Every structure is written in C-alpha cells, then in structure tokens.
Length: 288
Image (cartoon, rainbow, N blue to C red):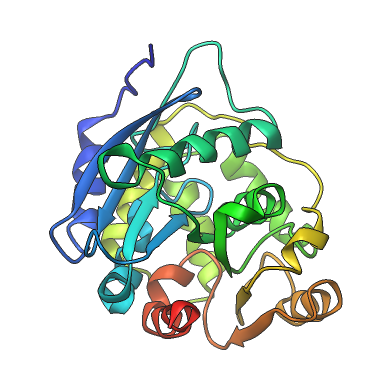
C-alpha cells in the first residue's frame, strides 16, 4: 500500500493557490499504479481529446494551469500529472521506487490506463512535457508509439543536447541542500530578470521541504520510433540550461519532420507560465 506523502500545510496551501488558477472545474484523481498512487489534476470536457502533460522536475502538475486557461482546456481534456518521487501529491509504493526508464514507462502505462472514463483505456493521447517531463514523454513515446497520438515537447532537456555546464554548476548548491532562499535565487537568476508568477514561486520555495529523490537519468530516447509521430518542439529563447539554437539544429538533424520553434524572451523554468498563450496556440493546432 502506498504511504501518504507527508505534505506540509504551507505546501498544500501554495499548491492549491496555483491550482486555483486553472479553468474550473478541476477534477483531482489519485490513480493507483504499480509504483504508487499518482495525483492527476484534470479539466476540460470529458469528451474532448486527452492531453496528458508532465511537468519539469519539482514543478508539480499545477504549472500547466496557465496553458489550460489560455485555450488548451477548450480543445482537450487536460490531465496534469504530479511526477512520482517529486514534490506533490503522488505517493510512492514502498519497495517499488522508480529507478529506470523501464519503470517510468510502466508507471506512465498505468497512468494512461486510468485517465479514461471509469478507468477505461483512454486510447492514444497527445502527450506533452516540459524539461525533465519532456525527457520522460520522449522516452515513453519511443517505447510506446502506439499509445501516443502526438508528442509536444516544451524546452526538452537531455533529449537532443546536454545541459550547459554553467547551468549545472549554478544549480548544484540548490540541489545538494535545497532551501527556499536558494530555490528563489536560482529561479530568479535563470529568469534573467523577468518577473515570475508570485504564487508559482511560493510553491517552488515550498518544495524545499520534500525529501530529495534522485531522478531517473540515462541516454536520449531512440529517435527512430519518434520519426513516425507528429512531434512539435517549442524552445525557450532565453533558456540558460542549454543553447536553444543548438537544440533546434539538433532536432532538425535527428527528427527532420518535427516542427520546431524558438520563442524569444522566455526563460526555461517559467516557460509554461510566461508563454502560455503561445504554447496553447501552437499545441492546440496539433489536433486541429
């Protein structure tokens, strides 16, 4: 049986504040998987095509509310997923940690099985992800292309190129011993002076209270199965985690049929919030 995550009241309050920015009503579901119970926040018509969104590391599913409100929830049944082992309301199963890409694929298999009406198979879904969530989404699509109607990657990390050494060095103190102050300082630096959503920033600061769990790492996904899918890649023009131009060139070489665009003036971590209108416009067209 999954052990409930000890969620501090301050985190719960901050989480609910960001979730309150979603277009209502929002359905909260705790889906049972072999790796524990997974929290999924959903909005939009139950009869609309499903869009499953994976956040970046530590960002929680709530980060997708701005995109949902900007139009995605008018075209899709939007499902935001709290990653297993990350801050949020997904509760890992004792003795079944997610340690490999195979584990991630098995976990997401179970999540997709559970998002349909009355727990039925939802069929192929449009799958999207940001940052580390995009890495998970790309690996899943490469392993399970029959379950993916289209792949939408938002500033994916370690899918096409590696991380900037400067970015990694700047992040190390926050990763080694996260505190609210270090998280705020790092995100402010990465944003390059651009104002950050206050509620989202408070929630990010509250993640410092969660136990550190090492994320799954590994190589880039096999590109061959991805070449058979509709793939859209949106890159943050002001990202410090990698060179967006270099990433765009790598995408063109690896997935020549993918539609890739660099959006200027947007940083990496706040991308789903700061560019929600542009993301919704482009991702909404994927199923149009």
